[in-house]
Image (cartoon, rainbow, N blue to C red; front, side, top):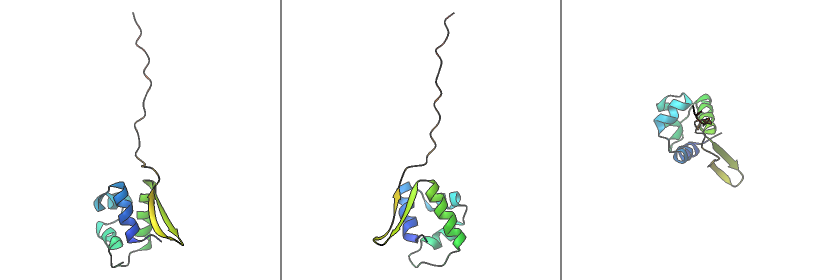
Length: 92
């Protein structure tokens, strides 16, 4: 299960504001704020799941080992525009 601390760290790596993550995860902003709160207020498991999936889709890896918890940015999942090869113009 992801923690609020991990979510905040993941947003920092991606340079996302809470509003952006809430939009991408399709959750209410108040639910995200509750998830990220220091007090660890209860949230629905589906909210945690949607937030986790949105962050993982952006390249975040959640780490939970015997040495601790954390996050790592594997890659930035920013779609790059496809470059098309241009054919040389025909001379007439």
